[in-house]
Every structure is written in structure tokens, then in C-alpha cells.
Length: 355
Ligand code: 6MZ
Image 1: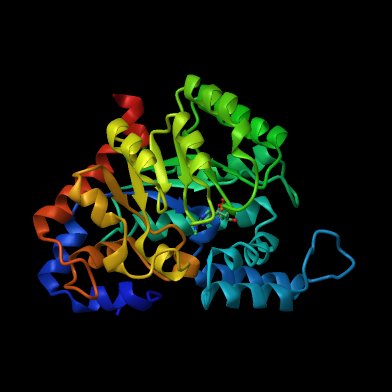
Image 2: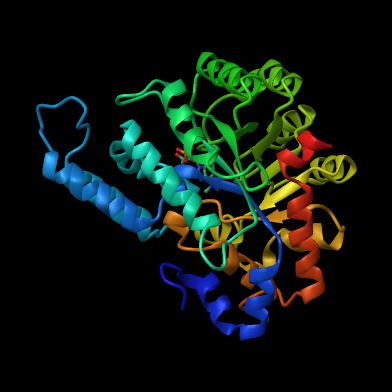
């Protein structure tokens, strides 16, 4: 079994023949939905925690959390036992306590990029990483994003790009600041390719976002929005988000017929995260997953990991879920899987920019 991978995705990978795994590895494919701080390799996080522990000074205001609390948060993220998506976001506080310096931000970004793009059989040919501009610890939002970009830009343009995420918990002013930051960096020729809306689906008011999305589009940025991730997201909210005409959609799990008709008509690519949905219990089983609907309608989709830190998956293991025989996987043919990988390559924001 591949190190660090667990659960159904690991079992699916294990069930494949060597030639099927080789087929998956060779496919040119793009990872378009990976949250930076949800994708930190556990050894990197453990190293950062042990350094934090050895320098911990309760009187230092930069040491926001006692090491025991950080350790508990990381354990919680590594051993998810959720009954819904509600409990998912809290433990990220532990991760944030460890990455409050420029040096730590450079380090985790380097580790995440390497995990996806380096080695003999890289997870993907192109990575569109996303992160929320954070202004905390030693850094301003600009300093944080600049550090992340510094590492992203070590890879060629055809291999890596960065999306800036707006967290639904942000105030409108902060969201505006983030869009202006994305616009400014893009105008400076930096590798910011798009904007995302993410975070706790139960938080925030998305009705005020229209001018911000418009501003981002005008600046030539791609738009992807987490939408209908839980049953609690009302249909009116999804219709409102669709009215902003995003290029891609994250999850799109609970769209009603009216919303689905728009998605199909506008050919908005749907970023699907199979393991994420299973572990966050937004989908009961792979058999019940909405991927079947989009495949049936020959609609553009892309298969993604979301957060490999808590979900203990990999992009190759997510593709294994497509190929493994039911009930472990979807039992798709090599031709169907190759088509899905091709759709991911056709849906990147950098493709959009070069079109
Ligand atoms: C919504 C998610 C998410 O931005 O600090 N995030 N938002 N749905 C999900 N599905 C499970 N998974 C992660 O990465 C971590 C942040 O990404 C968002 C959350 O806001 C989380 O705090 P960055 O790099």
C-alpha cells in the first residue's frame, strides 16, 4: 500500500493490477482542487510541531496555542470521524498555529508542491493549488501569498498555478482586499490564475459577492466556487452563485434540477472529490455519488483530492476509485478514465488564459 494513504481509496489502489496502476500514473492529468493547508504532508507538520514545542514560550504572543492543543488538532485531522461536514473546519486552527512565519509557509508550500509534482511518478502533470490569503502571525496577506507564490513559481507555468480562496467566514471588506490582491499580483505578472470561494458552507452571506466576482473576471482571473456542498445549502444560494457564471464548481453535491440544467447548459466543469465526500458524509457511498450523473451527461468533470492531510488520499488513489471494480470503485474502463483525465487538463485556468 502507498505510504500515508488509507481507507477506500487505498483499498481501490491495492485492488488494481500493476498495468492498471501504470496506466493511471502515465495519464497526463491536472489536480485542480487542492487546499494548500489541507495538503501538508504529515512528516512536515510533525517537524514543525516539534520545533514549535522546543521553542514554546507561553509569554510569547506569537505562540497562539499550547503544543498539546496543536497535537490534539492534528490527531483529530488525521483520524477523521465526522458525522457531517460541521466538525471539519475547527482543527485547522492547529495547522495555522504552525505556519505563522514566512519560513514555515515556504516550507509547507515546497512540501505540498513536491508531493504532487516531483518524483519518478508524480501525482499529476499540472497542479492548480489554492490557498486563503492569511494575515496573521508575522505576515500580512500580501507577504503570505508572496511566500506561497515564490515556491509555486519555481515550477514552470505549465506545471503549477495558484488560486486565491475567499473564505465564507471573511467579511466583505476582507474578501474585497483579497480580490484586489489577486488582481494586483496578476498584473505584476505573478502566477495567480483564479479565485475560489471556500470554507464552512454554513457561514457567510454569498449574496453580496457579485461585484467582487465581476472584478475578478474583469482582471482575467478564473472563477471557481464551492457550491451546494451540504444539504443545508439552500437552492436559492446555489442559483445565486450560478448567476455569477463561474468557470468551475467545487463539489456541487446537492444541486436541484433547475441548478443542474444551468450547469449542463453553461458546461461549468465540476471538481469532484470522492474520498472527501465519503469521509465528510455528504455522500453515502460511491454508488450514490453524483459523479454518475455527470458521466451520464458527458459533462466536464475533474477528479481532485481536496485535502490529502485529513483524507489520507492521493490523486492516483482517487483515479483508482474510478477504475476499481464495484463496490470498491466505479469500474470505469481505461478509455473512460483517460477521457476524465483529459477533461481535467482542458479545464485549468491557465488553459483559459492561453485560449
Ligand atoms: C470547504 C474547505 C474544504 O486555504 O488555508 N477547505 N472549504 N470545503 C472543504 N471540503 C472538505 N477543505 C478545505 O486551506 C485550508 C482551508 O481550506 C478550506 C477551509 O477554509 C480550510 O481552513 P488554506 O490553504
